[in-house]
Length: 161
Length: 174
Image (cartoon, rainbow over all chains, first blue to last red; front, side):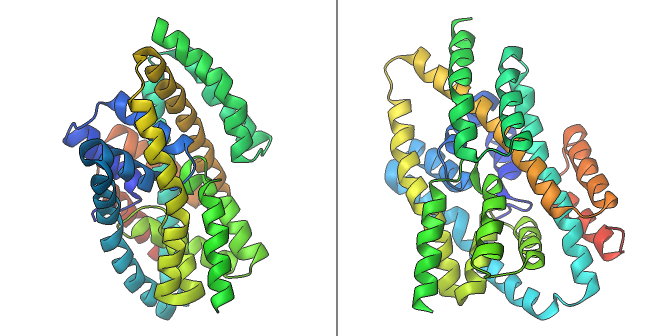
């Protein structure tokens, strides 16, 4: 419920930095699986973490726990938005918040990047993904398909290192 | 109404299995569907929904929930949220078990390293693409970059940053 600014930065903070349920590498890897499998990654992460500790019920509990409160509150906010979105103050506020929101998503990426620096050759995969997605505007499915062979090859070398 | 809700359900369910990199990576596609193709909402409303989803406590997929709410109220919101979640949840449940139950620990670790690296690339490129869509002024970009810097060098809770962004916006800077 305290997942302000998107749950991902918060989830990382709670799971890795505070509760230490998972190490930074385990979290990155688990998040990696959750993001490589298509779908909302926080729901996926809920399914992963929940089922790891308590199977199917754990998965349901984690996802419902993540969703119910926020959805209820969100609908209240949505009603308020309907009434007040014409005000320039509200519009300015939303512009400010979305700019910060983008920054939060990016910083989650940069924090994960720091983990990858332990094995620099892996940066080639990240570079490939960025080029394919941003420069060539490939669909996400194609980006993953393209970058996977190199990722698996380098990951195998990292394991054998 | 029923046909709109069905269309909402099926299109978002299909997206669930296309959403490599999560909802953030899906935002451009989502924009295209809800604004350009189906005309459920306009571009400005989409940006605002992104901001609300960021500011409200809860996952980023709230953008989808809000689009559903706009289409069909509480029922629409529920349908949209379920639609985007169910196919991928089932998939990740079995995939995660397969990977964790793997006997060859080296292979398991390799898959996780590979997936981790891909995720970093996907999150970063998604952030870049969303920034281009959402930020319309230099000050907005400055705020985005400032946010990254603060997260990197301090341990502030994201809520403070959201509040600062909101305040700067209210004061008319963004």
